[in-house]
Structures are given as structure tokens and as C-alpha cells.
Length: 171
Image (cartoon, rainbow, N blue to C red; front, side):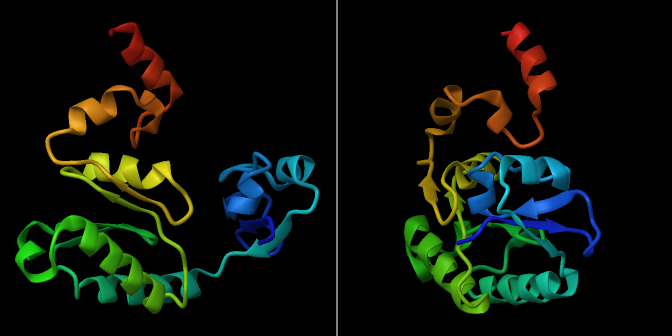
């Protein structure tokens, strides 16, 4: 419930991540600590704990194998799970998303997680980013194109403001 800024070490000057409470003040990953303090005077600096993050991540990814063996780890806190072949076993994707949340919650001692359910990895990633923390967004099969149509291009993983401007200029 407090604004936290995580840095590399106790003397780190750049945020490698921050809590949602800090983000509410406009604090962002990659921001210099002095800028974060200007936006959020009450921000609490904490050093990164990569061994702890790796251990929790490993527990989570291992737990998710109970849902499907088809897991692609994207980063320490993100994974893509193909549930196509598991629906007869576990039920529809919405049910499996809820199962994934429960598995993650147990494996991490209560961490929230945002989940995107979609036909493609790209649209699932975008969907998972829309409601944070702890959101669940479903893009129904066959509706991906229509669903993506009205989203700003910057929401697409890997498209920054310059590429978005270039693409917009070409329709």
C-alpha cells in the first residue's frame, strides 16, 4: 500500500521497477530516483532482490505446469500459456485463467497477477496490460482484429511513440 521504487542496490539512482502506488504519482520504470522523489516525495527506495525474484518466479512457472505443459516464459514475471490442448481436461479458457490466478497466488504467497486470454500471444500480452493490478481481460476468438482496431498503437508490445507516429502517418 506504499509507493515503492526498486533500484539496483542501496545506492542505485535509476528505478528498475515501482509499485502501483508509486505509478499513481506518475513514477515509471527507468526514471531517475531524484525525478521519482519530485513526483512522489513519500516514495520508499528499496534495493532489488534478484535471488528472491528468481526463486518466486521459478515456483510460479513450475506451478503453472499443472495447467498446461505448453509454457513460454517471457520474463521473470510474465509467461504465455497455450491452453488449446487442455480444454477437455480443465474447461474453457476463462476457467483456466482463474485456475492460473489461484496457482500463482499460492506459489507466490499472494501476489496479484493480471491475465490476458486471447488467440495470439501479442493480443494476450496487450490484454493483460489493460487492467492492472490483478485484472482479467478476455479477447473472444475471432474478435482480435476488431478488439485491437481502436487501441492506441503504443499499447502493442514493442511499439514506442516514434514507431507509432510513423505507422500512423502511413495509415
